[in-house]
Image: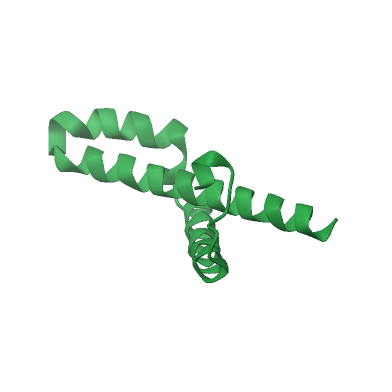
Length: 83
């Protein structure tokens, strides 16, 4: 739903997703692998050397990116609801 710019219609699910996303973003900001400028080159370098490590790096980056999207959509929705 966040890809479509909407929060989940069930408020409980939406709140749970938001809380999960906030934690992921907070951890991701402290982890250099969450930054695309680091994640992609690291994945490309480690792919021939370690195989599966590249996939894990990209999956981690994608999870943090999705979490950022959830946080942005939720906060935008909350601001619009306050108006």
